[in-house]
Length: 121
Image (cartoon, rainbow, N blue to C red; front, side, top):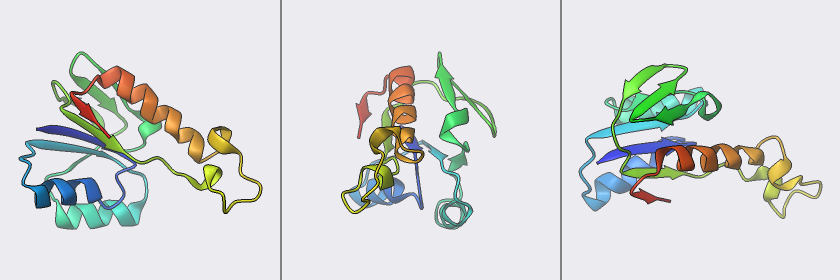
């Protein structure tokens, strides 16, 4: 299974897939936080880190990223959980999906449409 994970964090998606016994042939991770990337590199050294979601595009089986161009073929599973600070009820001055952080949700939607995966979460 080829997986594209955006807002990957410390690769919790990869942990879940491993625990559930799903075979993953390639795992591409979009993450910008250095501490999260370091954690993933330690626990899952075969992860392909593709950088900032805003600098990722997919067309005809090719991922173009700030970290290189990758022939990935078909994406089987697309996962991600975009930042939610701007939509949280705990933020009195929240800006919704137009906010600086939560507007990244639209990058998830863009890549979802570009990749047309078999499954997404």
